[in-house]
Image (cartoon, rainbow, N blue to C red; front, top):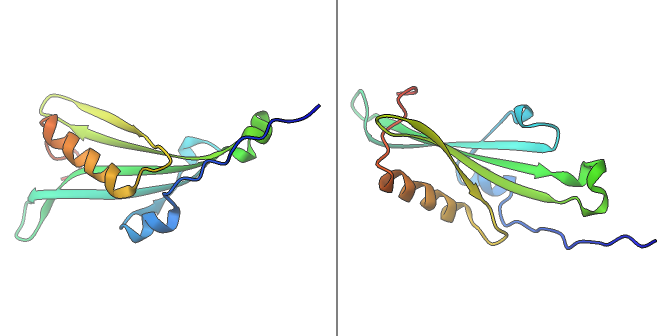
Length: 129
C-alpha cells in the first residue's frame, strides 16, 4: 500500500517575521498541543487618557500550528497559521477570524483588520483603556 503525499503548505508568515513586525510571543497552551506559538500585537490609535497616550483599539493574535505531529493525520499533517482579533462596538464585542492563505502577508492582514475596524464602526477596547 502506498501513502499519498501532500504538498507542504509553505506560509510566508514566520515567527521571525512576526517578531520583526512588532509582535510579542505569548503562551498558546490554551489552544491545545498542536498550536506551537501565539504572537500578539496591540493596535493603538486616538487620544488616550494622558498627554502622548493613545487608546488600545484591539489586539491581533497570530497562531502558528503544527499538525505534522498529529498521529491521526499521518503523512498528510501540515503547518498552518490562523489569526483572530476581538473588536468592540458601543453595544457588543465580537471576534473576527482571518483564514490565512499561502500568499498572505502580515501587512495585508493588518490592513484587513484596520479596514474592518472603520467599516464596522468599532470603538477602542472598553476593557483595556
